Length: 390
Image 1: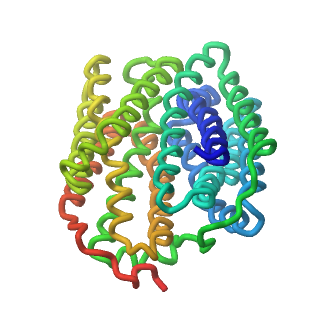
Image 2: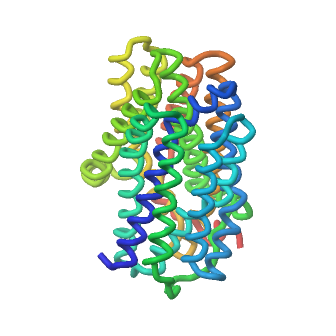
C-alpha cells in the first residue's frame, strides 16, 4: 500500500470513529433538551441537507485548490461542530452543530477524489475497498465507544469525537501530501443529469431503487435509538453496543460473503435477496415486543443490507458506459443524499405520531417494494451515451 493511500485510510478511519460515536447519542441528547421525535428526525436530516448543498462546492474547490487544503478545512469544520454539540444546551444549538458539520462534510467525497488521484485504474477498486473498510471499522467501534463514554456524561462522547476529528486534521496537515491529478477533474453529474438518467429503462429503475433503499435504511438508522428506548427501555450504552454488533455483522458479510454470493447469483439476484432479507428482518423487528426476537431479527436485516448495498452500487456502475461513470455516480449520490434527508423525518415523525411499529414497519414495506422493483431490472441493457444529459 502506498504511503498516501495508507494516510488517507487512517484519516478517514479516525474521522468516521468520531462520527460513529455520535450515532447512539444524538437522539437521547436531543430528547433530554426537549426535542420531539420529529425534531430528532429533522436534526439528522439537517446534516444531509447541508451536505447536499455544500458537497458540489467543496468538490469544485478541491479541483481548483487541491484535495489537501479542502480536506483539512472540512475536518476542522467537523471539530467545530462537535465542540458546539458538546456545549449545546438547547435544540436550536444542536441544529447549528449538525448544519456546521454538514456544510463542512466534504471530507469523504474529497477522500474519494484523493484516492482517484493516487491510484491507477487497475488498483482503484482496491483503494475504494480500503475506504469501505474504514467505514466498517468506524461504524463498529464508534457506536460502542460512544455508548461507553455516555456513562460519564452525554457531552463526553461529543468531546471525544471532537478530539478524534482534530487528530485526523493534524494527520492530514502534517503527513498528507497534495496530489498531482492523474484523472479527469470533470465534476460528476447531479440534479441536471437526473431526468435523462431516469428516462433510461434500466438505469432509471436502479436509481429509483437506490433512492427508496437509502431513504428506508435511513429510517432504520436514525429511528433505532428512540425505537429501542421506547419499546425496550434501551439507554445510550445499550444502543451503542447493539449498533456495534449490527455493524460487525455487516462488515463480516461484506468481507467474506459478498464476493462468493455475487459470483454465484450475480448482482441482480444478490440485490433482490439482500433486500428481501433486510425488509423481512425489519418487518419482524417492528412487530416484536421482546428483546431476544428483536435482536435476532436484526441479523437478517444486517446481512441483507450488507449484500444489497454493494450489489446496487455495482449494478448502477454496470448500467453506465465507462465514459459516463462519474456523471451517473453523481446522480446516484444526489438521490442517496436526498433519501438520507427524507428518511429521518419520515421515520422519527411516524414514531412520534403513530408509534414504533409504524416507523420500522413502513421502512420494511418500502424495502420489500424495492425488492420487487429490483427483480424487474435487466442490467444487460447498457445505458446510452445520452444518459449523461449532455
